[in-house]
Length: 253
Image (cartoon, rainbow, N blue to C red):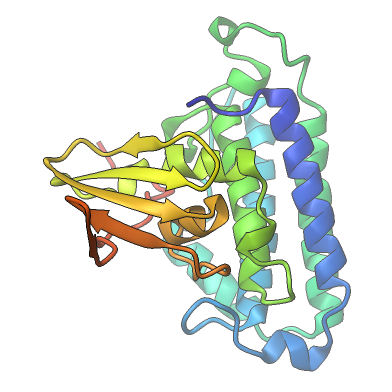
């Protein structure tokens, strides 16, 4: 399984940003105070995070363009959390302005990247180093794609996991393989599509269902089509537990 090309990724980021912008435009002051799909977070918390990660990823690219790297968030995760808590209670108009500004900044940075045919050996453009996961700009683009699509579903505005594209779900299969515990091996069997094996443990479980339901489960979200089924040695079983979401902050070395 491979990641989308830079050109396809850029298109996906734009589509996700347009969807977020459209859905946020419909929220009222009361709506942003209501719970999101994330425990303990209102929609306002989610919107503050979307604005924050958009600006943070834009900053990664802005520094990469001049051959420099910078931490994802000022103050690390503590700084990220403080910023979300401070902005969560804003009114709908302020959230719209903040999200719009963050998305425009991020899109401007990605749109300014040089041609997608540049060699990865050049360490420029899509392959310029960034601090995020000690990766390159392409990794930052994939992360922003994930953040926009998944958190838009968390807003509970009607654009749930059932709307996720097949390429996006297949990317989640690849990225979230890191959540499979060491002792587990999962054979993902999306209906009508080729199976995908993730994990390398000795205990095998088949997880079947619609591709969007499998992706939602791997992402720690509620599958929206109620199609998931787990089997082990031909018998029905519970879905296995998963490890935490891969950290955005690399371990210090």
